[in-house]
Structures are given as C-alpha cells and as structure tokens.
Image (tube, rainbow, N blue to C red; front, side, top):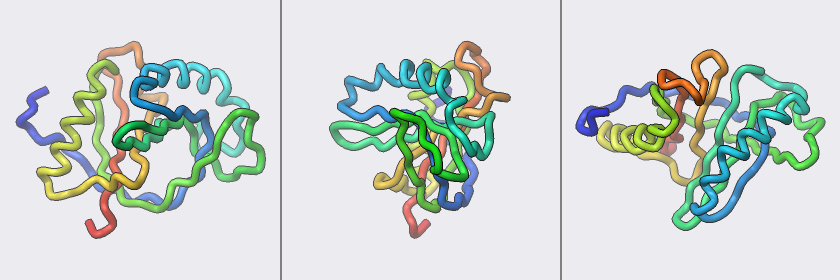
Length: 160
C-alpha cells in the first residue's frame, strides 16, 4: 500500500441501529483476544433472533486513550430475546465515511491508519465519541484468504 496515496471512500447516512453480540472491554493488551471473541460469537450467532441481515456481522469499536470496547455483533430488529452472556448496543443515527480493506487480515491495521489519514486530508474528522465499525459480509470476507474484503465505517463529526 502506498502511504502517500489517499484511499477512496464514500459517505453514507445510517439510521439508528440495534445490535446484539459479545463484548470485550479492557486495556489494549487485550486486543489479542478479539479473534477468540469472534470464534465464540460465530459459534453462538444462531442463538440470536430477529436478524436484519444474516450474512453481515460487525466489529463495533470504541477506542479511548488507555482502553477499548469491542463488540462482535449483528444487527437486529428487536431486543425481545437476548441470549445469555450477550450484550445489546444501540448505534445512533450517524454519517459514516466508508473505506474498504482489501487483502489479508494481518494488513487490516495498516488500512485503518491509511484510512484515517485519508479522512483527515480530505477535510473530515472522525467523531471519537462514537463507535467505528468493521463490516464483514459472507460474500466478500474470509479471514483465511489474501483477497478478502471488509468495510471500515468511521463516524463523522456532526458538522460535516
């Protein structure tokens, strides 16, 4: 990836969304547990009712200075039945800049850094008070493949 090149992105508006999933919270030293969180989530996702789209999962991220919160989740139309040990989250209506990561998962963090740089250099600012998202659809994403794709959604400050 050429670090001087701006990554292309689109701006999308999203309505409020309900999500159910597994939650991981802690210092950045726990980030290595995200893979295991996804393994557990993928084994249990069939327990979740009212899926909006059964082939789309989300990593929901809140990064702070010293720690983070991460959800492996799916969008639902209702919270009427939440499986034991799972958490709910409501994502507020928001404008997102959407980037696509193409390539192996071990290069994902490089794409995130390049995307944030492209966002800033394009005159936009990430809303750090809101969650950013990783979108994984079954048709484009496969963690074992080098040509895998997933989307990265950065929330934009309200005035942009």
